[in-house]
Image 1 (cartoon, rainbow over the protein chains, first blue to last red):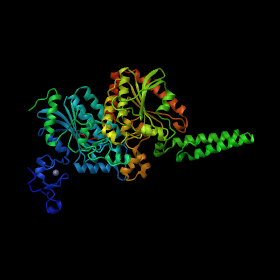
Image 2: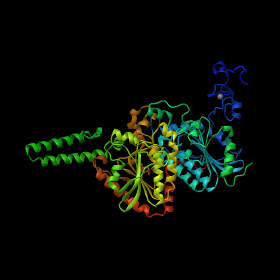
Image 3: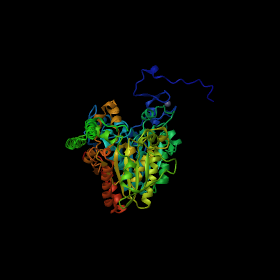
Image 4: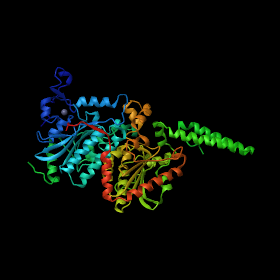
Length: 284
Length: 324
Ligand SMILES: [Zn+2]
């Protein structure tokens, strides 16, 4: 019986200007001010409106693997800047800045892990690294983790978050779509299970390759997922886009994802699925 | 008939051609012999054309690749194949006229020929959506490729698109899924696959017909992850810098051959494919015949193995030792 309750007014950020920003976060969904620690315990999902805050690659690795089981592979891979690309800034500088920001690595983290004690191959994209764009290194790391899955018969889990192709690597970046998809063709033929987990935002060349090739597609609530970005579409059709267009729920309605899954249920959903799809899977 | 549209760098050639036409007209009227002057002008025109087309800047290459008089897929099919029969529809939603496909015979080979199809005028472009496919276009292409595989026939794709269409219906029906599925399924089709970029190889919408054993590019075709205009708008904050973007993106056939993305460059007649459709067709046909011969000699296992290795290698990266 909610009607007799006094309406709760969310604390406005302006009223609490003195709140230290490393202790509190404001929810983009409902405006509520949240204790960072509570939010972290809740996997960065707002307890009031279920808004999913951005999650880092490391955080997804924690959720999707047993503690201490993740063994990172391919961390030494770096872009070779094959076109010696320079726009207003040299690509090499953009790479260096991105590396500083995320503390080394590239736009995807890959490796071996265990999930409820079972072996898996895991890849998680990092949107903070040049918008999670896919260049040669991302393509190579995805291909390698795919090969690992194939050779060691480990189910493959890929978590996507990407603005698309890394245009500073020209056609090489385009060809990573073919490279990653060709590896998935081999997994497909060998019946190695692959679950694609789509998070906010996943667009362009990543959506149009490995992210849409899962045996099962899981999407986080409210995530923007599409081929073309909404701005490009609006400019093309000269028309405003409908509310909720290209969000997870829209994709679900149009049959493009199997399930929209709350992050707090992600791990158990993946385990449930692999219990059916991975022949040697043991439930804890 | 209106004069065919021409590009900025073609102006000198167009002027020279007009001079030749005037001379011919005068000679006819006054019944005088101009054959020596005519031969000289024609020689100059030929040399100018060859010189110009050998030294095109990247953005000029882009313009040639998009030339409104450039031959399109059906123009090539008419010239290189016999027994052509077009097949329609994706069996799920509709027939997308931005992609055409069907059986064709090239030399002694029965093949499945599939390509993006641009329109020659506004009316045809409305029907063909300027060669920008919807998901059903890609699904039709995949259906036809599987048909070819079923009967052990090779697949040839002709690539010529600004890109896959960015629209509401396209997203609703899964543009990304349709492209992705083509990439994966082409990687495992047990039949020879050859793609040729004949004009614009625009991003994922082009690649969706491009996961093939051999990747050919016509001399003045381009292949790019994004249009130079789009790239300039994002990275230079203004589409006006498209010439810089075209240069930086390394999208010409020479660039892509050097980067080992394109396996082979198919020569065009001097002055580009649009200046002589028949000659352009002849070059394409002989390149296709050669590739068909060598690929049809391989077993499906050998084909797949080579195809997987080809795409596994693609890209460039550095690896720090001992960082594993
Ligand atoms: Zn909230």
